[in-house]
Image (cartoon, rainbow over all chains, first blue to last red; front, side, top):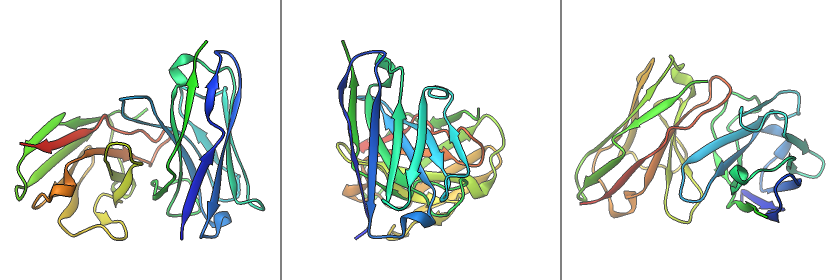
Amino acid sequence: QVQLVESGGGVVQPGRSLRLSCTASGFTFSNYAMHWVRQAPGKGLEWVAIMSYDGSDKYYADSVKGRFTISRDNSENTLYLQMNSLGVEDTAVYYCARGWTAGTGTSCYIWGQGTLVTVSS
Amino acid sequence: EIVLTQSPGTLSLSPGERATLSCRASQSVSSSFLAWYQQKPGQAPRLLIFGTSNRATGIPDRFSGSGSGTDFTLTISRLEPEDFAVYYCQQYGRSPFTFGPGTKVDIK
């Protein structure tokens, strides 16, 4: 079945880095754009980043631009989020989500269950 | 950045009633790029509607979306017990692809 599994979350000190992974199965990963979306504890959804099917297009939320980098390895069916210079405001559950289409003008169709990132000293 | 505002913040209704949720954008959004999601406690969000009015796979027809420009609506024709949740709108036509703050539909 179609599935997305996030990993790499955990507790990290402010200013440090963390890399999240999202492993896809049950569909042709290289055919679809992929998103990262986060949700701080008790708060709403915040879109983070998107990458097109081939990695040629990517966009970021203003709150993470210059600190986070989205990437993908289509040979490994995996999406990544490299997070640098983490602050307490980055504490959240991070979800990866598959789009409907290959390009970046797409909603979040299939979601993973999320991985929790806690930034704390 | 396109800011989305959702109203009301909380909607208290009984099963069987009709729910009407509003999403207003600070700038015009192409109707091709407006989505609605449902989220229940402890679960990942689920896509309900994309392109303003298209139901995602497996979504019951009691859910419908409409609107254009800056004003969009999600309607649940008759609330089922499983529909009590938080609903978010999202625009994905212009980066950053912003979400609204959500409307909680709870049991009256």
